[in-house]
Length: 315
Image (tube, rainbow, N blue to C red; front, side, top):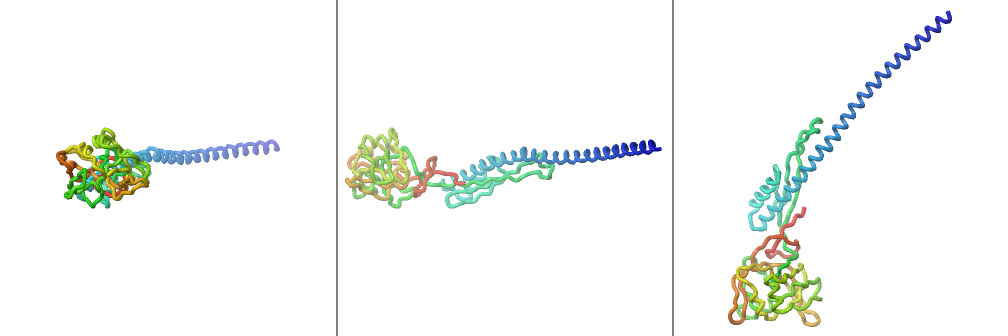
């Protein structure tokens, strides 16, 4: 009888162990399924972040290029004297040519701001309901005077509220009918500039000045700066100018003498002088020309705008 009870207990225990084991296995299988589902969601999220996020970044770079192109083109139009409406058309045109599907243009005092946008289509992110992302970039540009230039004609012009388009005579000596006399025109040492009225040597005479005018020895100046000068008569240098040529000339607002009586001209901006006549016969000798606008590459500055400009991105 005792053996029968023992056998029954053993059989019950074995059945209980099998039931518990079967329940545990089913529970573990369910947990694995949940873990796999969570892993797949995380994997999709990572793939969306890497693949679609990389696509968004690439579109963002393209839009930055488009915005830069639009801002520069619109600003160039303004610098060339076109209207605000024409500048907006230029900005949108260049931005669109660089891949933007829409561009908002704002005309500022000295330039243009462009916000260029496009739609970036998602791939893996569509699984979570994100089909497309609007990607935009912003850029601003402005038109500013140059702060530095080489190949500079070594003739300093006194600022007299002249304007772009004005035509004047420049003589190698003072005369009654002169627009700029010898005292308001200085020959400058453009190979040496200083933040103070000192330390620059002689202009070098007619031969050196002629080389600078013709571009054989192209000096470089930085704006603003002091340049050593001589307001004497150097007719041979005047005769180095050529009809039909453009010359960037330094513009000064005052002169400071040093302890030896030498003149240092405070050059604060640049102007472009287009020579239309050279007076080679008789005395005095001189040139005739007009101040014109010029737009091109160069180091931007903050001096007074007398028509010699460059364009720079500010944002």
